[in-house]
Image (cartoon, rainbow, N blue to C red; front, side, top):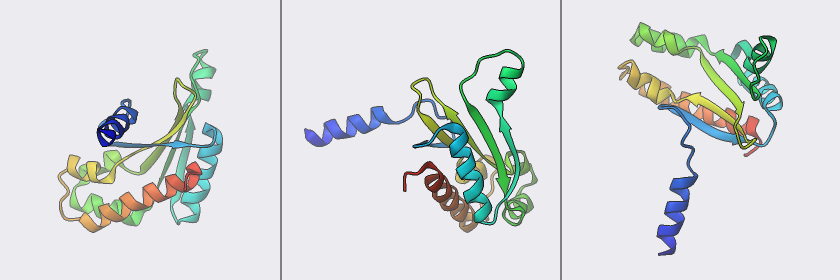
Length: 149
């Protein structure tokens, strides 16, 4: 009975707001601090940061109130190019992105597209090891930035 209660508790605690193919974890920092940390860890891991977009600031500029939300766009052309060799359409989902937002409860979340979901979406079946490596790296980097490791 205790196992069932624990299992049900875990199921109901899972984020229901995550979009299909999106991995989400909580951060112990605010949005700006989390993105600062993400930018540092991805750069230190050899990724190139292409852009940082502050959606909250953009909304404020047009008089729309929005909880803090930022997007960090980054990648490693060597990995992304290999995926594009397999299926050029994957370029619509590349480079990789971390989305950091504050939810209605005031919790800060880090979300990213699961590389396995991206590969499946584009029918990429010949890059399993690369996709696996990307999956582990994205989780490791997010965990480090979130301060939950």
